[in-house]
Image 1 (tube, rainbow, N blue to C red):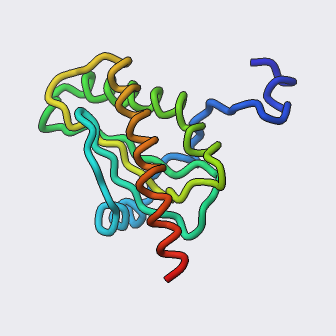
Image 2: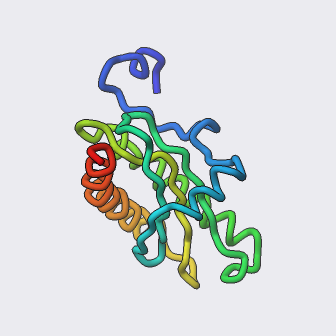
Image 3: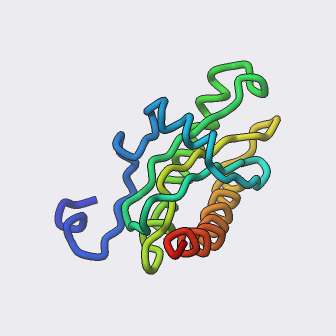
Length: 145
């Protein structure tokens, strides 16, 4: 990508910088303690709403169970697939009209066998769309109460 293209308005950023990675233990505990979740096999998405709708990308955690995949090579491969699918499709959240209500999010691989990238990406896209559909009324209702 040329530098001039990155600076033009309307150009999408397909990066996934360290600031967008969810690493703080306190935030992770809060996410799994108070967060809402839904499953789209082979993925499970857990999310916690932001205080107000925003266009900034949420902090994201990517996880694969050691119980299902004993070899670190396999876990790392699946995490790489999920990060890449999220990186390419996070614009669906950040470019949502009126912003999105997601503050933190975890993408967990719950399948027992490795799936191809196309399937993981398809499920993640439908998960992000469902997240926008489910989260938007909740955020509006919480801000009114």
